[in-house]
Image (cartoon, rainbow, N blue to C red; front, side, top):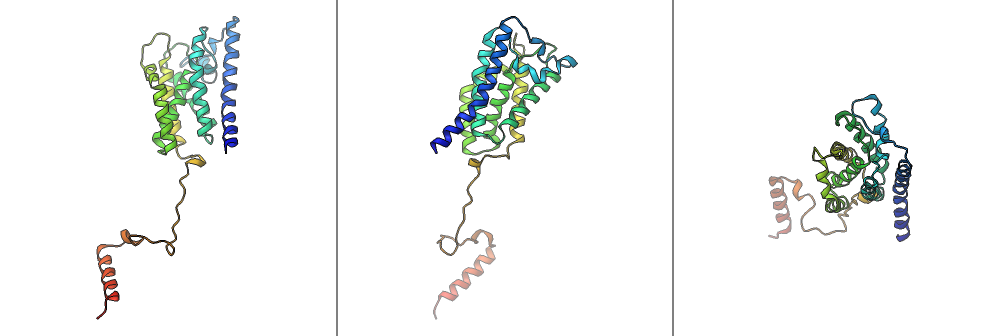
Length: 232
């Protein structure tokens, strides 16, 4: 079992590591003087459509922008891949596209870059799985995410200079929508075991059909049982 879990763990971190490697490689290229901010989302302009797909790869020249996104991006992707593998890649794609498209439709007319919107979507997806799925695993993960990233709620407040709060807000909404869409696609460990009873071999305090009978039927049954058990 430990070997299986170890393999699952390493498999779950491979893709996040690859994504971060790409993000940092692009950042190094930018630090060498090749600016890519034009690949961001520019709302309601045809030239900004490409940013729906590319903007999460592009960060500002200040390396702290990418550093701040790297840890929550890695953690949230790894958690989803480990605990929600069945829907993980579908969830990534939907959150990615919904966030970018939402910013293109509703954002301010400035260039929006960075993966923070996707991060908000992934964190919201994990949290709302606890609400929509309502099983112990999802609820515990939701509580952990709430404790770790509750401070992110401040990021959705408007009028923050240099911050695409629209990406954060829309990403969070995208995560909620995605969680709702995939709420029924549960993992194998979320399936409730079916309890089977053998009426012939088990003793019950009440008869199995006690709550299926009407009051009149129960009285008739009790009267018949009393007469059959009585002696005259």
